[in-house]
Image (tube, rainbow, N blue to C red; front, side):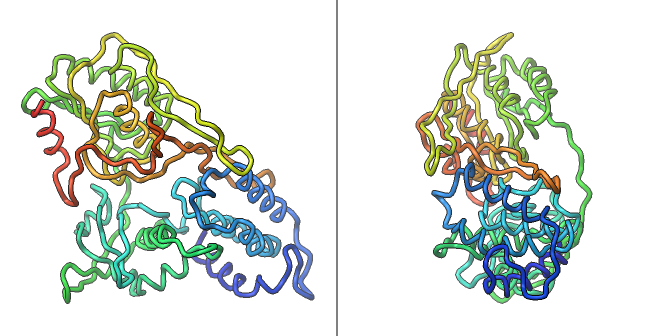
Length: 407
C-alpha cells in the first residue's frame, strides 16, 4: 500500500469497529460493490487455502470484521489495493504478497537488511545483502538501527504491526521490524545507526538501480574445487547453463553451488539440476496442503536421475538469509538426497509453495502460501539450519572450501 493509502486506512481503522461489517455510516453515499465482492473473494480464498493459520496468531475472522467495512468504503482502486495490502500484512508472511504493489508502497521485508529485535525496541542488523543499497552505504552486521528518516523505529513498527492478533507473537514483531527497515519503494532512506554504545550516526541509503547479472556463472577455485553460482531457478535456460558449467568440473575434487543471492523459482528448474548428482529416482521433499481446518497427509516429491554423467564428488551448497523459496528447497533437497552439505546461515524461512490469486473484478494479483514443504525426514523447511553454520560476518565461501578439503 502507498503512503497515501496507508494514511487513509489508518484513519479509517480508528472508526471501523463502531459499525457492523458491510454497514455504511449514516449519510454515507452508496459505493460500488466491486471492492466488497473482491474483498470477500480474497478473505474466503485465504480462509480455505492459506496453510499457516496453525502457526500464526492471526484472528482471521477479526480481519474480516475490521477490513471489510474499509473495502466497502474505498474511494479508489489505489485505496482498495492499500486495504488488500493491510489484510495480507495481517499474516506476517513474506511469501504472501501483492505481485505488483504501487511504486511508492512499502518494499516489504528482507529487501537488503535482516534485523532482529533488540530489547530496547531497536533493530539489530544480522545480515546485509551483498551489493545492495544498504551495503553500499556501509551498513554492517552488528549495528543497530534506531530511526528511519528521523522517526524512531518503534513508531514505524507500531504503524505496520498486525492489528488482529489473538495474542502477542514475537514473529509478528520481527516481521514488522524488517518491513520498517526496508523503507518505501522508489524512495531513499536515512538510517540512524549505532555501532557501539554512544556512537550514533546518520547514514543515507540511496536508491540503486538493480544490476543484471547472469543467472549462472562458474569458475575453478584453488585445490581443484569448482564453483557454480545459481542466481535464479525461474528460467528454463538455467538448466542448460548449469549443465555446461558442470561439464567443465566433471573431474573436480569438490563442487560449490552458491545460491546465496537466489530468490527462488520453480521446482521444474531445480529438480533437473539435483538429478545430475544421483543415479536413480529418489525422494527429496514432502508436502502438504489445506484439508478443511487442518493440513492433509503428506505426499513425497521425487527427483529423477539425469545424464549425461553423474557428478560423484563432494558438494556444498552456500546459503544466506537471501536464499529464498526454491533456493531453500534446493539445498534442503540436495541434503535429503545425501549429496550435499549446507554451508552458511539460515535462509529466508519462506517454507511453502505458493498459489496465485487474481481478484475477479479489480484484477489485483497476489500470491499466498498454500503447500508447506518438509524435508525427507518430515522436518519443516522453515526450520532448516545449515550443516556448517557460519557466524555473522564470517566468510561462507572459505568455510565451504575448508569443508571440501577435509574430505
